[in-house]
Length: 188
Image (cartoon, rainbow, N blue to C red):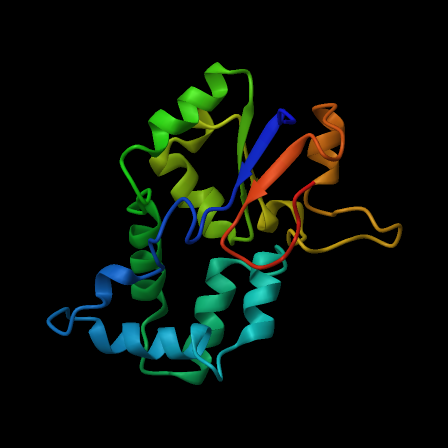
């Protein structure tokens, strides 16, 4: 049995089930209609998928994305949407209150535990500080900051997302594992 030096943990639907603007998903909420519009515009079948990818790759900010949605839906208030986005991101929660305990146990065994997320500036700006992720985990890798998704490779075939971290930590391929809800085989 091999022992891993590093465990990479995905955020969305692995460490957390929290969603952007999820607190607005209540028919009684003042901004419920705005929630429905933005969910369809960004995350629906006919959503702005290229915009979302650019956002995750650090090419757009939250302000840019909110402005783009509001250009298509002029009745939406961009300041309100951004404030509610910040609120939802700062209130995100782990899938279980036991997550910090499990992370601490792995770290106590000398295994690095790193959040590895294809995410937006929202994660770095609001979620990470609100949940104090830098104190709980050894590191937080966000595609927005790295300007590449977990599946992205450069011209030489190296991971845009993982390689710099692995090299800096002197972790060889095969000495780490990625736990992710996606179906991509990205474990190194």
